[in-house]
Image: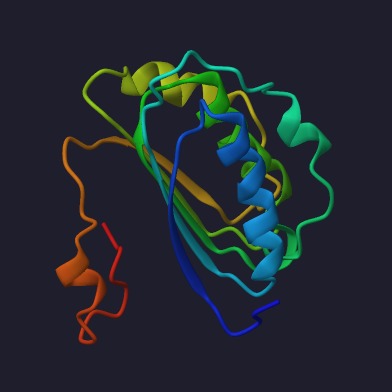
Amino acid sequence: MVRTLRTLALKVQFGVEDQVKLVPTLLKCFPCLETLYIMSVPSEAPLNVDIEFWDQVGFTECVYSHLKKLVLEAVRGEDSELAFAKFVMERAQMLEDMRVLVDGSCSRDVVLSRLSSEGCVSADATVLVERHDGTAWTFQRAIDLLQSDPFGC
């Protein structure tokens, strides 16, 4: 376990079961994580992920006790992406800011309505669904020590 890591950025193919199962394992390695960025990457193969998977994930300390910010980027509105978003919304007691950045192939309103039907455990959380047609993630920005949040949108 690495208790000092506060910000983590991942690229995940939510349509690939092995990658989805790796996410909670990684999160358990960083129990004090406060900020999580996930870029959703399209998968070549058809979706083979059981969306009920997130209901079966056990206690994840960083999500329950420390996660303050989640940014999901390049969301296409797939069930597996939204299942992860709901997992966080239902468990993250310290969540302050959740942003779901939808790509051009997805309806912002559809994602917003699907997420708004879920309750957020944190009363102070702001959940925004916004259109996003590019990426803020670059290696140059990530290594720039002057940036307080190298993956910030």
